[in-house]
Image (tube, rainbow over the protein chains, first blue to last red):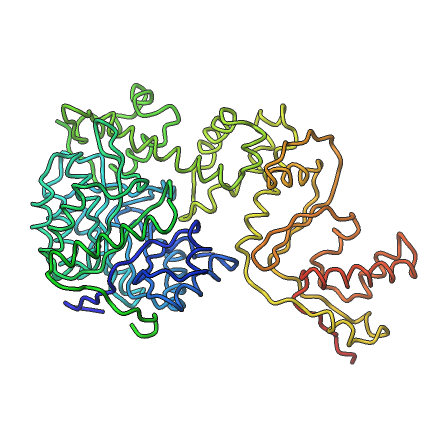
Length: 289
Length: 275
């Protein structure tokens, strides 16, 4: 995958252990699965058996949480080697992680922490993206994170920074619509202006998820259904971007699979309404991608 | 106004603030100038949410994400201690051993050792053994896959050649010596039953995975000594004969080997070639 190519996988779902029995039992009607990379960087056992079964039935995308692309620590090449081995085995349609930092001084904070949007950060991230893409031998997609902190010395907006990273490092964008909404609320910017600032041809995938309203801020908890204003923002994103692969994320208070499949269906229906035609994809195996 | 922090300075200050055990507001009076500047000068406040509260969100998420991961990985330790004591244990543990692995899966890799010197041990002296057991259950869960030797492999080897047999063990097999029968607690936790009270009793525990399930069993001390060994069978037999005599040792080992194969603990039975 390179340049302006944008494969369309359809409407997918994050693969979570709670749903393993249902998925392996009935092979639900979902176009593809997004799997958390780190959950499968293990030596063996059930996680890898499940992934082997899932990838033989559905296209799969690897979505990491530990790349820590913005950290000032050296890149963790032990981690990257494991990711590269997993990529060779799974043959995912693409590989993504987050535009953030997660570790410093060798301590992993296990969070997706915001960067200051400065020239220093931009140079640092772009140089590391190039290293990662060289090492993996493929482009990666970076996702915008939700945030609760913004830095006074930032010299550009988040969407300007995201755009600059994607264009200067020649990587793709995983645009999390929920995160745009959450951060817009928390920092007081216009989420639609954010969408307008994203280069259409760089967006490989959209994320949808739910948040919790804490009164003074929105918390990106991934433990609720997608909220109405996020669906509205999603419609606007589809209108701007055209057909783009979408996946639903749920990480806590995970409901039965059927409930999440209804939300996947809603994502499909809204996209069809916006684009004026069916967007369903015939199911393909990973090998056919 | 101070100069803006470099990216490296920002990340170090942010990390220290979000890992402060009592929270950001509590640590700020003793924080470094760089940490205070990050909070008061370089983190934006809004009328509805000031910079301290914003950083506090990350501090809370840091603690509870690791707390919840450890609670998932050490459910029996948590059940024994109760919510409040476990919370305090995690606070102490993270101060001593912040995560140095990219995966949360390994956040608890030093908890058993940490408990050996933690005050909680005075009330629950078996906690280090229990944490060790729960860690090995995790290790077995995602240890490397391996096939198992079939029983007929053994049967095909004439008894007179058993002395030259060596064993390859499956990777998902662990054994440790406990001072307390903590497997009884673990088993009750698995069955959602009431937790039994324990009396100190040295025991050898075996942890292994067969297909997707992880099992724990108490085994005799002599079995624990032999488990995982790769010397020829004759060597193991001679060692056992020192305490039980040759005939009994041979019989016990033959029975033990058949059980190990039947339980899927042996990956391959090899027969050393005679020169």
